[in-house]
Length: 595
Image 1 (cartoon, rainbow, N blue to C red):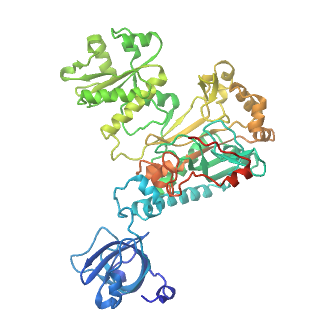
Image 2 (cartoon, rainbow, N blue to C red):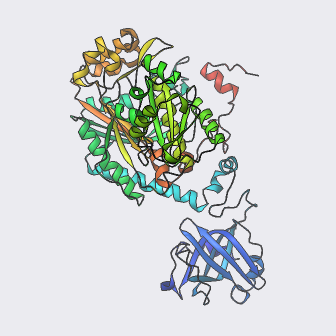
């Protein structure tokens, strides 16, 4: 076609907006050839851009000599065309698309750029190997469902910004090159050319800087922040990720949690979904004792029930000894799940072994409330009746038991609970279900290092009434921390921070962080706390994870434009890669080759 075509004409419409109201209009469309159907004389092409599809028709009577060129068009050719909007012939409407009642008869067109045959079909819902998709991510983004995820992410981002702006927050950027303060995951390190032998670290979060902003009197800060953690990856983890990070001065837990509920509700609404307020709350102890995990999925039952007081005098040696040692014995009632086969039960036993359980005791409730199990003979009728009553057992149920240290029982039965829900599709078609988890332990104990470690981070404030416990019973100290959970995934967490230098020093002493070490790692923050730092607290939303759930995707990679693999590799750019030896010399570095 004539080369002047594009320079003289501009696109008038997208491929997703033409309707019968546009019949008879001359239009200019641009996009990619998605499907091509050659009917001899007539050539039909579904032209696609980010807004949708329009069927265009090449007819020898309208396109003249250009019709021969139209025969060259193949999948993913980039096209520009001018034509007349017409109603589709009777009986040929496509109600699945917005433009399904019209078509454009092409009068003039140009192939802007031909395309090689794509490595995979770009039509909606085509199953493609993920590595291939990531290698050609720029093509993958053309697929409607992938683009829809990016559009959803954009809407959620704008909703977050709009809500926080309306609440008087300032969006402030914090440094990407900072000091390494290793307390959580491993840092990504960046060598300095100007200070050879020294390193920057990429931020795991803006934690220290947002606290400094509170000292600076900003009072309400937020940031759509990029964060970096060098840790093992999985479906909901990437080496670089995004948080909606916020911090507030002169607030308590109720203030932060209330504002967060409004923020999340605005994000959820932008995705066309609903969120019920207020969000229910569980303490950490309640969550662990009822669900085994500190990010409980409340969309189904299968709660953990304490039975130690019922089995301590039974003949079953494993339970009797566990109770005598002060260990935990809990059970789950799998309502209506007694149809599980022996192979299923063996598989579930192997499954919980991966979480530290030494076995999985089970009992099927048969007709007449008869117990069917290898362990049934060790329980009297009285024991069976009391256990049945507490668990609400009925015919067709199966009871699962765990007996061990609390953390093993919680983790193994908590994961079993999720696995049963997956197998029996207990979360199918359930609405979004949120909860808060509060009153976390401030500290945990690292057996390897033989010292206390912070459950969240060392700047989390203890509850005022628990401060004295730091001296006498540190593990009983509760934190002023809170997590918000959606469908069993933690989507955000935060705390009220320590704003007094004396309390911060006391916690560092409990953590066995020496004054010299604290000064070396956090000296700038500790000094800032001595200049009238206000009470403050905040929260960070795991934005990738939240958007993935709203999109109905199992992996955050599906809502990130250019994600890494589970090995931290970018298949598109082949990062990480080797660098020129001259760059290493400038940095004073030498790389040891590993065979």
